[in-house]
Amino acid sequence: MSFQDHITEFAGLPVLTFPADPEAAVPVPEGGAGAVAWRLDCRGEDDEYHDRDFAELLDAFLDHVDGARVRALVTGLWTYAVDIENDRVARDLAAVADRLPALRSLFISELVEDQMQLSWLFQKPVTPVLAAFPQLEELWLRGTADGAAISESERMAGYDDSLVEPETKHAALRKLVMQSGGLPAGVIRAIATCDFPELTHLEIYLGSPEYGGDGTLEDLASFLDGSRFPKLRHLGLKDAEFQDEIAAAVAQAPVVARLETLDLSLGTLGDEGAAALLAGQPLDHLRRLDLSHHYLSEGMRERLRQAWPTVEVDLSDHQDPEWGRYIAVGE
Image (cartoon, rainbow, N blue to C red; front, side, top):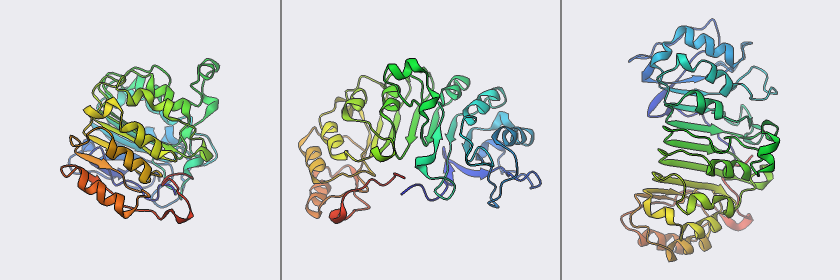
């Protein structure tokens, strides 16, 4: 399964598409350019391509919309030819950073399945965006890493296939979401070296080894031991084929004591992982625990419902394990 539908809201704002068709009228949102999250997609809402790439679409957008008021952007396809690699969105946005001084939230490559399979959606490092927008507070990235995009020194250091360059610093980033059907271990290790002092929300889709998701518990250690990101209040380690092992580690992890919400959803969680959560440290302080898309027995689900009466425990989307366990977001 991959993502089926485009988002309709981002950063608390309704999503409005800037037309890819140069002949189409540009919508004027009530409340001005900052009242919506603008979507830039080289495939138009008419499902047609209009022979211009992301840089051209971005220029047209800034010619028609007051960029000084734009607070949120969502990008889609970066070209009219889907076989051209995505090496341009971060670069092109960085080049016009001075025209987008109010940008605080960015979602790169919000593509759905009928546009491109998630496992085919290869990304270049997004570090140029972080460098160009020092006030950016929220960054979402959908896709996986292109190993050709990193240096030999990074590869030698174990940061293979990095989406974020190791030891990246950003003083304002509060929310980082990495959506992938298979996130390489090198990406996880690189994120763990970054300096994001204001980060409160970290969400990682680990994915399947079949699509490059070769991360292990060892790669997650820096997130779990509380040594990184001192202001973290939401941790999502999700969509993993080793979700039981993650749950067992989380049950003892020092970082949990300072969290408000914990997300272990979309993976292969079964009774073993849930039992570890029940036997581990108290979770009564959490506001929400997301275990949706799971393989839990009815008896275990009932135990979880009773364990933390003040916590909102999401046990929706029960899966039948008869034919095996599968993550929710893969290919």
